[in-house]
Every structure is written in structure tokens, then in C-alpha cells.
Image (tube, rainbow, N blue to C red; front, side):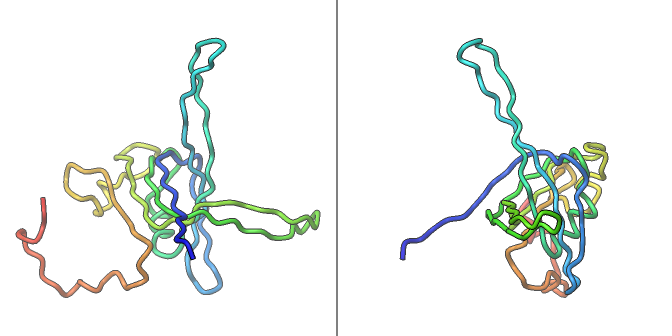
Length: 160
């Protein structure tokens, strides 16, 4: 069987605050939309126009909780994930409804303090250093996040 790849990379802005719900199992699920914009030159008029594309994004577990706590309308995000399509029967019309979305594997908060009406990554304690406004959350591993809580880290262990 041939190897296949299902990977999506997005760099865009949130259109509205994320919607976070909890599954019966207690796992958090965050749904939100990200806008990306392409600049296109019209051949006939020689004018540049912007074309915005909206992407449905879903995050689960700890990443969904991070989205709930730190991501707000207008924030710039870098997302890596995979495409999935869900379907269900609409309760009102009985018709089958489809939704294609990106399931997040990795999320990086790129907005700084005061951008997008949300506390920036620099204020979350997740930043890489004092000058950085990014925080990264990888959802691929299901291992507990506190495996190294007992390990002592010195300045020599930090690469910057």
C-alpha cells in the first residue's frame, strides 16, 4: 500500500471567540474559525484584491483548554493538523450535512499582549523567552504533560 499524507498548515487570524464544549467523557473540544487571505491580481483591471478563506478548526483535550483560556477573536495562530470530514442528519430537514475541518495536532499562539483583545502568550508563562510572544502546544502525544515535573532543570539545559 502506498504511503499517504494528510497534513494542513495554517497561519491566520481568529474570526470570533472559540466555542468550547465538553464531551460526556469530560474531554474538552474547541471549535473556531481561522481566516487566511490571498492577494490576487486581476488580469483585466491590473488591480490587486484580497480573497479571504475561512477554515473550520477543532482542537481536543489540553489543546482545547489552552484555546479556551488564551485565544480570542483577532489572535494570530499557526496551526498544524489534518483534514477530516464529519457528516450527520440535520434534525430539522432530515438531510445529510457535511463539515470539513482541520483537527489540530500543533498550535502556536503568535499574537502578543493586547492583540486581538486577549492576553498574549508572553503573559501566559508558556513563552520561549522574555522577548518571545509565541507558545506552542503539541496535541500528538497522549502522554501526561508532567512526566518531567520531578526532573531538575538548570541553566545549562536551556538552549537559548
